[in-house]
Length: 221
Image 1: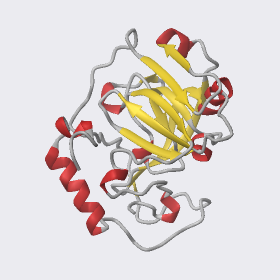
Image 2: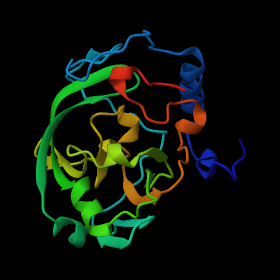
Image 3: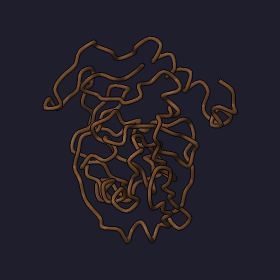
Image 4: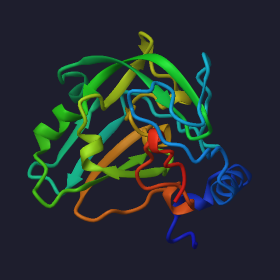
């Protein structure tokens, strides 16, 4: 893969990424099981009270007063939000579990932010829209089916456990998609593109699953 195909390649922690690529090749953490979503802990996961910090060796410094979000692609009404625009939207609070592909799960996380459904109602996806690509300030990308992004428990979060999101956890704004492995919940969100055709993101290009359902153990391709 060339740098032109993957511009982030010039900046990431190569040893960290190589390790995770090896996990995909080796099937690290796979149990071969599947479970109904009614079971709280997905196959191969273990519960932790910690909130591990995982990134590509890059933690961009993004101030709220300079943050912006662009939403476009297969939508009727593209939009661009400043921080003031974002905070002026209806605010929701949600509590959910998160499941990382590295096998840890953390229960009962409390978030505050703007629901994905509210955002989608504003931009009006065209009939052709079937996928979403999330882009981050560190160059990271991840893709997911529109139906998963449009779920009622998905949000653009600015607070966790009653406090503003810290930079290491994706502040000022990150996506939270609790029904998929947490690499799909992009940190440091800067752009959302709705697409007619799927396009793999940073980890998907490196052997990770396009969807990432923890209960089906969709860790890798």
